[in-house]
Length: 75
Image (tube, rainbow, N blue to C red; front, side, top):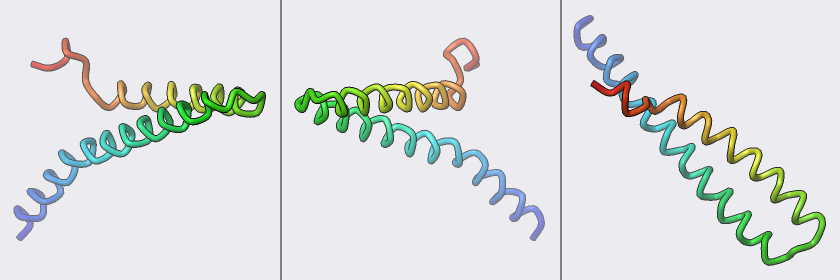
């Protein structure tokens, strides 16, 4: 019983980063879509919103890089 519990917990912790990465990639795609739609507008408020979205996108990209190991770390 305990062994099965440990296996389930281990599987969960192995799969969790994949779920988080998928969510972050969806957010990046949504931000890119919103930036594209705002780019058509060209108003000052749209430009400000584009800057804010670009900052948010860069933070999310940093999170993705922190979760995904670099190629040199993969053995």
